Length: 278
Length: 298
Image (cartoon, rainbow over all chains, first blue to last red):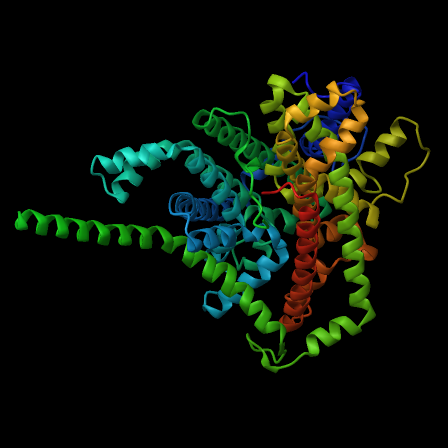
């Protein structure tokens, strides 16, 4: 990389460090104050405690919210990934107008603000007679996670040499066998990564779920409800720390798995054409 | 001979039938999801925006009243303009601050690139609500920032002006969508042909003119893409204004949310949504025109 202009490189490095500090410092506030033995989140820290974490253990509403989040997350991740695999594969393998249109539509939700996705699906589930419910949130989160799933799967299928499936077909395998025995195993790391990131998208999603939840809130909706009570602030910090930790672990695992499948440095979401505007 | 030709024919017919089945089976999930969840769902929002509110799900009667009301009431014009201003500022701030990071990643990060890329994108995968909540805690009157300033003796009493201002909304949103801006710019910078830079260096161009005349123009599509993915979620946001914005930061997303909540006027909320989508469409078309102008997307 010596071809690039190198002036100001040390300035640039300082800037990057400052930028990363800016990214992480506000988030770090949550775990720091989750161990502070005061209702007030302010300096100086008054003392160490794990009481707020213990208070999470016997909160029935919290446990139900966690259960809802897990069920919704797994369902939405399964749907988004399954659709992502088929849409990504058809766009790359068939490449006809219909497949390309479907792929562009599946990536379109990136260009729709969450509040509009939320109200559109609220009207839809009411029309369908479902009303706000777990199923409604699953549909909403499938839609929110779909663009990422399609982009990840598509870039993986693009990276597979066409000769693999051609060889299989020449040896007499039909499309279905080729897809199941050749393509899917080769794409397995990307599928796992897409599933985990879709799960994470759903697990942390608030804006859309706000409109679609009935009597069973997800974890972020539970947190939102708690924000009204100043006394609950430290417990929210403790719960928030746990949620942050889970997110970081899952995102890291997804990245490690994906990298094992595609040995280049880049993230799948940096693939060209991830936006449906061109 | 004819028997084998016939069996060859049936085999081919069977295989063709199989192929069609496979294609239908593989197309169906995506077709169903996009038809129902994207096209139909957006379609009913558009439909509902032209209905009058009579308390029923799909409203009663066809009318332009929602749009007329939204566009003639100065309250909505103010809120829409404020949303555009806030989203515009956030977009500008995120893109300008993200560019050097993407630049460093593309040209200087070397073997640490994968790790660094992961570090700057990781916060994006954490809960958006918690990131906004963290800023509320940081900016509160008795909060982290004020108390830190007091403890260190930089100020003698809490500064009121942090929380519940439009500035707090801009800072919080810029922080929330920072990673969104880095990725598209980084991809564009990756595509800058290194040979062009070398040639310019050989011809005696100074680093700054190489940046201004070669790198910046070629990376413009990435900058536009970044601006778009930051602008879209911020212009419709309602959580950040509610948590850190105070009464003077109400955005159009908050108004839409209210129509589907307390105000309970779904057709009017749908009309506001359609207006937001039209604004976004305008921005997307503007970005495409600008993109063509730079002409490097194939």
